Image (cartoon, rainbow, N blue to C red; front, side, top):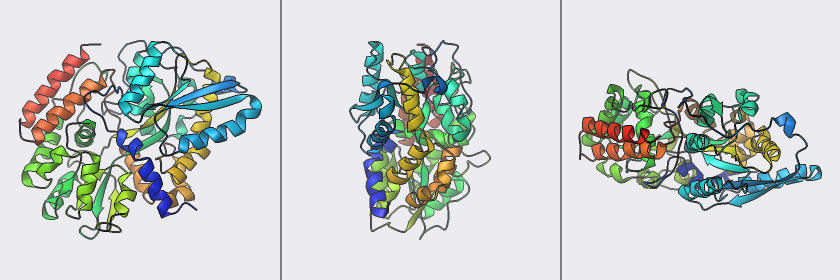
Length: 442
């Protein structure tokens, strides 16, 4: 039986995967997402390097498939590879794992180096959701549209946006993620219906902590509010900056006012995921914005154990709800030596059975709708219903081959505004200039 102790251990082991969903630094080379419009963007460029074989054409594939990924700290990929080899060995098809360093930057760079060398060493790659546009635009990936069109009804629609670029599908979601509001049940009965009411409550009950440092996490936290307020980062064609808008200003002013009023502590401008989690566990704060990985860790702290719950994000007053997707997709290298084997491998690794195991045994958020209804998953993930809602209402980050520069422009300028160095208006003007400059490079 997969009990609480096992649940906690698995979440701790896989915390790096979840945090990496919005982690990063100035050297990050990530590259995809969405403008917040929820639609597929097209840059007019010719993307990708040919179509992947269909599943029907891939039946009976033989040979080896090399699956490149970061460190499999949770152990789910090793377990799935073992099952794959047991199932397909008689067919003459095998899978081996090639693990890259834990750093998301290093994983990205290792894959890019191989693609630039036209190396076929990696058949599959475990790609962060923000790399799709860059990899497709550089013709590193095979077009998976034929495969995905036959299965897309199985997936939560929001997760499909993480593999879309130029009107095509470039991979298959295997793991997803979305942020939560953590709240103290002994201080508030439920999360207020709007962000405005939540901050008003936070001001009288100790405050709210979140990821406000100048890094990728702040891009996520800001966009969760900006998208809910109706804002966008890029135009629908991905060619123009739309960061300097009344909607985005409203969201940023709201965040700045939250720090000024004391609803959020000034120290939040230095917090990443773990600093926010530890602050919440101090027992001082009533609310926290964080990823699901923090749930089991918080339950181990006696100051908050049994005293908190989680909920999807509220709406922005007068507008809507949003969130930011994390997660990883399985993509096929344009230089794969065994594309038919790779298609069979992806079909297995994203099958309902494997996705259910990933959720129930390894606490990895599933991209498949039906998985959330499974009893074993609901038992292992006490917040399964809230997680599904959070993923459903979430959006991807801006789709652009220059996403790293776009994100940096967001988090540096938003942090400057939160810390009082510049006004929200000037912060967005500066971000707009920087994003426009980045977009002009492609």
